[in-house]
Length: 438
Image 1 (cartoon, rainbow, N blue to C red):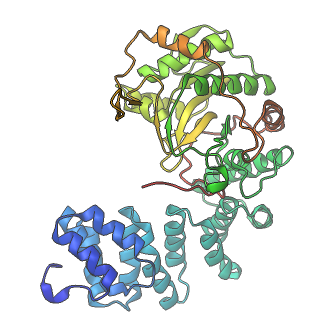
Image 2: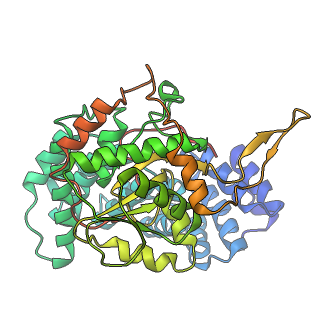
Image 3: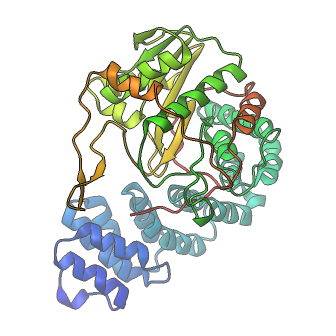
């Protein structure tokens, strides 16, 4: 359908994507599309997307793209194309088509909501706020005004979020009640966080708490003023960083006046190692994880690794709903692609991480660099390298102060709104941007 030579795109940028498809490189073609900008002819974009979709067997997107190629000015064709682009995880490609569909449909609510979904999917919350605000007088409370509040928070505009939240009526449809309660918790967290945090444009810890309910233990000092804002990119983890994260967890529990009775060990090796170290640092007995256990700290090295272990998905599902006195701590959390559930405490945010006992890069005698072997000693011995380490020092003069005093003050300020609600995944990184590496 999309392979005839006389239907090749005319745009030079899109021709590059087309040539990638000539070589069977669908991911490369999509990267070219994302980099092409949003001013490309929609029919030609649909031509490339349709061919890529056809190559991987996405019939729904193939048909929707063909409709735009045939009638690039028809609002329903543009809407369907944008919808299926969002569903197939290429939201950035969806945005121009949905914007045009919104213009041609005189602001149809269903099109507006799908455009907002595309912006949300791509982390473009300010643009979602702008579009919703253009139609503020015609917004239905559910879901439109709710979406305005949601995106205003993630864009960092608490004044707008609070003003619009005050206008929201209680939902008549019971399906929206959990969203209403979640939004109440978000704004309660914001009120608490502001007592000890600036919630400025680079306040990663503050906004992480507001958006997800996670208390972030440490901030990366690397590249803070070069766009990282406290997140790590590629990290070879160390026992000292692990220990520093556990000491922050201990300080957090103390500030929140929690008295857990055990550490619960998840079954994957990384989490068991860190959990044994946590039990030593917190002076608590370690026990295998059991669903429903109260007053316990569940420790994961990273939740994605825990989910990949045999039985992991079931355990992750059991951790979604909160148990009284249960605290979920993850040492490392991937910020561009967050895990399936949100931890209550996270030591650090990264894009890619290698555990201290994993196959880390090492220099060789001949001056080369290669991956060394993983540390396969018994878990208790590896855990002892954490508890016996020197904690990584507080960063000096890099970004927001991250000393014990600042962290403890923050933990004390938020203790009333911490550990509330479920642990639903929050995909957005929030209003604090970070450089990322493909």
